[in-house]
Length: 191
Figure 1 (cartoon, rainbow, N blue to C red):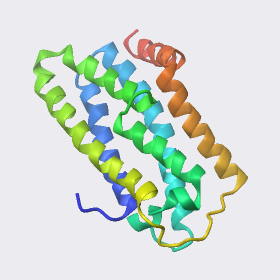
Figure 2 (figure 1 turned 120 degrees about the vertical axis):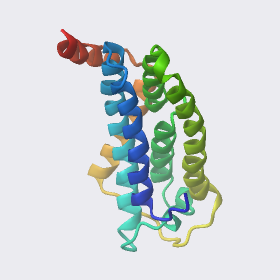
Figure 3 (figure 1 turned 45 degrees about the vertical axis):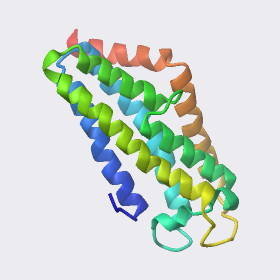
Figure 4 (figure 1 turned 90 degrees about the vertical axis):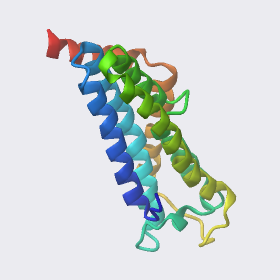
């Protein structure tokens, strides 16, 4: 809870996301397998974007303390926007891919009566995690920057971040292509 290192924060976040994957796995169903595959793709885009921003903001000070994102919106609006989309997708906020991924997992798990307690607990923990993700966003937009220099990012990093943002938004609004790929993959496991 009091974590002040961004990389560790994202690492602990990864543990929570692994719990969602395990919950889908516990359903022992094709819906659970579909949810796992979609979830992993959504998580890939959101987490890659978040870690890339953390790498860019921490390279100037050789640390990844939370205060590195303070005032990021003033230093680099694009990085702040990319990290915002990544955090909201990881939190499961609509209309991003992370929301639909969590919804698929919860839908698969709720079909199993013995997992109902886990679905309820997960719902509560989604709200708790939203608070922590929003704290990062608040730091970027509402706190003054510790360092007022403008952050430069390479063209490759910019394109990669843009791709992660677009994927999180696109697969949140238009899930069908990724859902269809997940269905094909899951069908091969259960076929």
